[in-house]
Length: 476
Image (cartoon, rainbow, N blue to C red; front, side, top):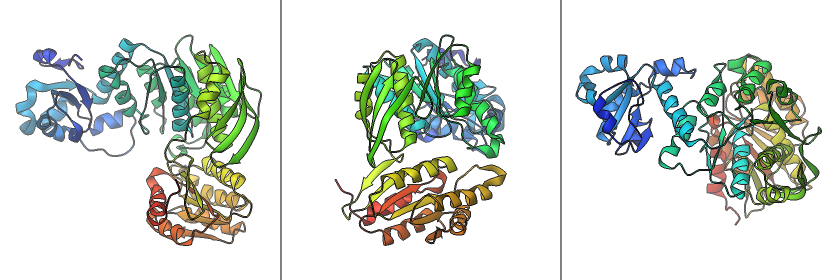
């Protein structure tokens, strides 16, 4: 990798070999190029909140072996007394985040293989993992985001893996957004997709975008960012998504369950948690799928992955075989069974009203007759000015869902509990945090119970799972 990632640098840096890239000085290794982000870049690139100025960590990066560092010229002047001795090893940029993204775009262009991009208000990571799994079953080596590295920093960092390992045949990349700053459009300039998978449009991040229509428009940036000749894969069951076909002049492939679609699921049969059977129909044919995921939303995720497989020339039989062999990503519909005879659905990665109610429906539909159905629900974040009333109304809908007990966790989950009680659910209570909720659930659980743990990472509802695993024995 040529070290000249910006226009202002010591020409001697052209002879330096860069091994990898880092944005955290603590993770710098010998030969890395360190990008020192600072608040002006974060603000200019649409990131919410206050961030540390990484310029002050440049000496640490060099101490850890950095070959060079990219910083802003004005930040260098501000920290001159600490950085003067390193000036010959600094690359100056007007915007370090833009330089980081530009480097990733150039790496992608040199690589030049197909990109499948996935977006949606819910289910992105599951759909991404399913899609990557399906394409790997076709013999492709697939690059994908790890964890939720799907924004203007995580996305280019994923792409930069291609510098040291360019042998991938395709990339499956989820693209996220949370502001009206054309985040997905920017990601598409880094890696213009050959296939754009649109999952759904829900009132998530409405605090920052204001209306569901603005969320739709932000998600539609993925379809608008397709390469010439690219294919839009659209959810026919979501009216906002299927309407995106008018934003794309090229090929469209639809998937769905309730509405006619090119890729669909017939004869759906839920056999218990993590056991769903259906007949996959693609334009190529029919085949039976045994999916180790529960819920209609996960069938839709599987159909999106199947649509991608079809675009890559896979038969229905090969796609079905791949889907039947896949397991759920951690904390996204994960089924945990305990030796004491109770079962937990761990969906503690993210939450919004639609996703919470869908998982509750999954819990209720799959519960054995007579099982006590318990829901542990964290407060839902970024719901805008109506957040309290949204929690209250969601609580009322939970009360009508057929569950037996609700535990609301932290903050606005008080309104969730109040709404459920108002609507007639007798057993509903509030816990101040996930640690308290974990202790409560662990003390009351008994044989035959089925428990859903659903919450956002900010609420840390995974700690409820950690408490259950600490106090009880997981079945093999």
